[in-house]
Image 1 (cartoon, helix red, strand yellow):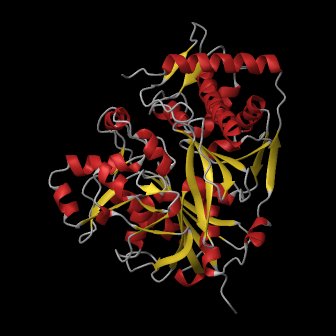
Image 2 (tube, rainbow, N blue to C red; image 1 turned 90 degrees about the vertical axis):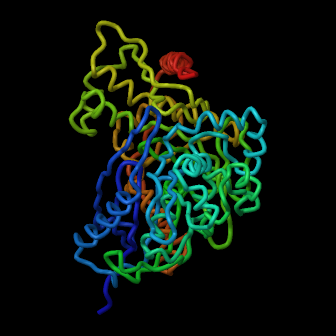
Image 3 (cartoon, helix red, strand yellow; image 1 turned 120 degrees about the vertical axis):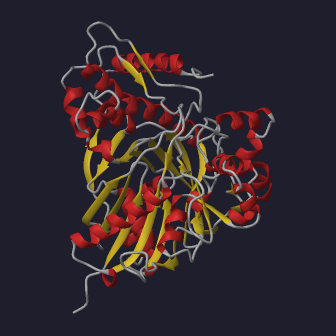
Length: 498
């Protein structure tokens, strides 16, 4: 009797590493998760230990497999999805990082970005990469490591060092250093990749001071790039899917047709609209990015990145100690009928789309003597929806078509109150799928397609099922008042840290 086969999805996120075992029907048979340290050396700096990223990811993979009592022969393929833009530089010979991973949230290179803008380079960079010139992306982080860690630039110029985003780091570790690869979705987030020519750009590498010898080979999102080595719990498994987490969630939501949009409510919030084979230039400060490469064809997307989404709930838990655990926030927020006039702008790492203000900082406005922790908690949740509304409006302007549906996923999408408020603000239908693990599903689908676990997109589309639907019920006057006050609050928080 043939053994049942599964796909192992490695979901390496900003605050935790996760592993999921997924079957042919898209069911999640086992999940394992492990948080890892967030390192804050200075104000605005955010780092991770790359070895801790690897050890936590390897540990949860072994744990998930143990939960189902399965081994390597029952894993048809591995799909990797990851926090994007986070930057790691390591020694090719020893495999040891030369510095901590600099996380996508990190703002230390904001001043250098300003220098490039003043030199008039922002538009040229945007034309080639589809990205705004911001500390969010990888290139300035690589440059910082090369310039600030003693001896590292010389070693890079000698060809001794490798750069990669987290997907490349995991692929390197999984294969015992045999492959140095990334995929198009992650490459398109570095400020070094020409999304139109679909290759690393020599001029940009020179401008950012990144030797080409450091760069990984760029692959499609769905192909076998290598097999696991002896450092992994189960050697010999094909690594067949690699995709950045937000593009993965769009694919996991089956947003495979132009015009489809999803929002993932994770540490940050990320809206992506499939624009098909066309790279659409944004007039509204959105990003033009590669969604995926599949079957030899590249699909593009418009993206709005919100830096602080669910992280505002972690701040309520760890910073203000308003709640004991994240799931307590819904009850606390619902203990008051409204926000009591309080607005929270969670610009802890600046503001992303559509503002792109790296000097904005967090603010709580409208506080009175009657304000309670419940009002602040409610305002924090509402801020997630307000930010999403801003991006959705920009996306509709760029696309030139009315938006009628928003597919949602991620941890905060289980909060019915937040999803209803989201529908109220946006006046579009908010649809939550039965399986919320869409990021992991996307990576699994790409990996499974590469090895014939699933035969076609049509087969995968039948797997996606709707769980709940939310529609707007708010009075227009109330919506207008809330949005007016939100935009007033944003104006107070902008350009704060200059």
